[in-house]
Amino acid sequence: MTNHYSPLDLRSAVRDGIARAVAAVGLAGIGLIHLLDVQGPLEETPYLGWMYIGLIAASLGLAGLLVYTSDRRAWAGTAALASAVIVGYSLSRTTGLPGATDDIGNWTESLGLASLFVEGSLVALSTSVLLIRSRSQYRSEARRSERAGVGALSST
Image (cartoon, rainbow, N blue to C red; front, side, top):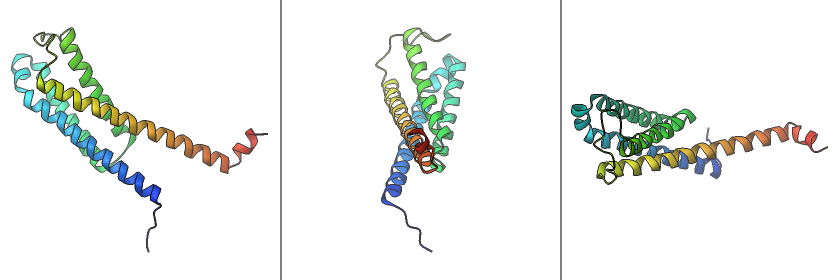
C-alpha cells in the first residue's frame, strides 16, 4: 500500500523538520555557551553556577524533545527558556544579581553576545512556529465549521 501525500503536506513536514533541527542546534548552543562559562559562577556565586547547570540540562532536554516531537509545549518551552536567559543577562548587566554585580555595564563580553544572538534567534523561531500553527489551526476550525453548516447559519 502506497501513501500519497500532497505537496503541501510534504512542504509542511520539511519545514517542520528544518525548524526543529535549527531549534535543537540553537538549544545545544545555549548549553555549550553556558558550559564554557560555568566555572567562574560556580566558584564566585554558587547559586548562579547551579542555575547555569539547570539551564544546560533544560536546553539539552528541550533539544532532545524537539528532535522527537514538534509538540506545541516544546516550542513554548523553548521560547520561554530563551526569553528567561535574555532577561537574566539583561539584569546582570543593568542592576546586577544578588551577590553578582561584577558584570554591570559589561555588554560586550563575547560569550554573552553569542548567547544573546542564539537566544534571540530561538525566541523568533519558536514564536513564529507557534503563531503559524495557531493561524493554521484557526483556519482548519473555520473550514470544519463551514462544512458542518455553521457558516451557512451565520450568513442568514
